[in-house]
Image 1 (cartoon, rainbow, N blue to C red):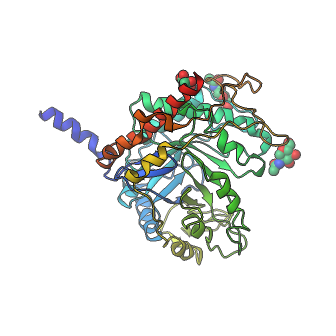
Image 2 (cartoon, rainbow, N blue to C red):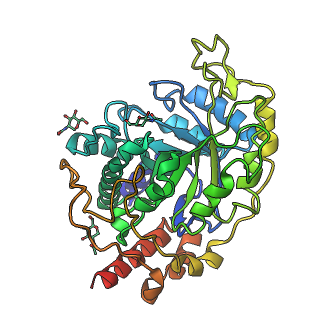
Image 3 (tube, helix red, strand yellow):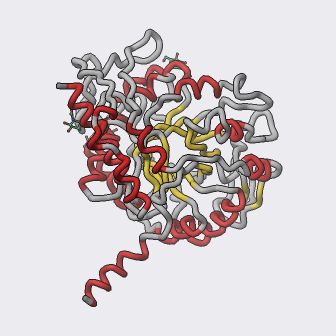
Length: 420
Ligand SMILES: *[C@@H]1O[C@H](CO)[C@@H](O)[C@H](O)[C@H]1NC(C)=O
Ligand SMILES: *[C@@H]1O[C@H](CO)[C@@H](O)[C@H](O)[C@H]1NC(C)=O
Ligand SMILES: *[C@@H]1O[C@H](CO)[C@@H](O)[C@H](O)[C@H]1NC(C)=O
């Protein structure tokens, strides 16, 4: 008994008391059953892991909280370091983490893509390090792997990485922390890339969320003239969560973050799950919300954060809007009726993958001419028994991502039915 107690206590320090985040249908929910919208900030200056200096994290988290921030995005971490202090500091401020699983040496390259054992092991080490924190909201398998439409075929490797990291997550018994991709905004690939990454009717081979780094809303434009109305039209029926993983155009100045009103307002709020503003620390590119002093050419990485005016208070004002979401218990039925899009056909000077050729096994090359698997449009409506509505209760009582597992299962089952 005593030993049991000690064991339980030994596990406590790593799991802080915030509700966990799960993906259900096209939305994120907390384990309390409330819809969760991202008001995030990109938190990384350079190659140094920003989640190891507890004092700095605490100072930054407290200031971010005054902005209305509830998430940070970190691009590269060192899995061998201890992140307990920083993760607790952010958790205490109600701030969640989206972290890239790749490191500086293992990301998937757009021109010469690989997905192999070396990469898998490095990604796994990052997952092992962060899966234990309740405030880990999501993992990226890549950031802007594709920066030019000519690199579109790399998407098969992104999908392979998502497949293997999701399987690894399950094999380790981790909670169903969503695994997604952060895409550059490339007109020629919209919406084919986002549809390809979720198509095929097999939830085990689809990403759990899609996100876009987009700087389309610049200066005094509006919902129509910015291009956001297009983004919305292309995402309206998307079956998994979608959000802006970078936004906040800075030309012309001052930055007003006017797009936040559209994202959290009636035009987009039913489709989009929020946004991550680029970025926390001021540097030469002039996107910073704070500065620790020093010159922008050689920015300091730590110290007392001084808000950049008027950007900081402009963002604070833009984030005063509180989107009204749905309750998980009211949403599970419509989530079950979402269907995955068909795999897109290739287009001239655009999307290169025709249909659904098998994605590469680990360490293997993608055969873009490979025979297409059935490009199933999976509908979850056909599978009443796997309806996620049953899991609403367990989610509300602290269940860990059961709803998304169940929905995934439903999609997989529907896929089987279509294949038969
Ligand atoms: C995996 O690919 C990378 C290049 O992307 C290479 O450096 C590494 O050696 C490869 N590992 C294996 C096991 O093939
Ligand atoms: C994309 O690639 C094409 C072909 O290599 C090249 O001509 C073009 O300049 C590239 N575009 C960008 C934005 O890099
Ligand atoms: C779905 O994908 C997983 C992982 O690639 C595979 O093991 C499974 O057989 C697939 N299911 C179907 C029904 O094709």
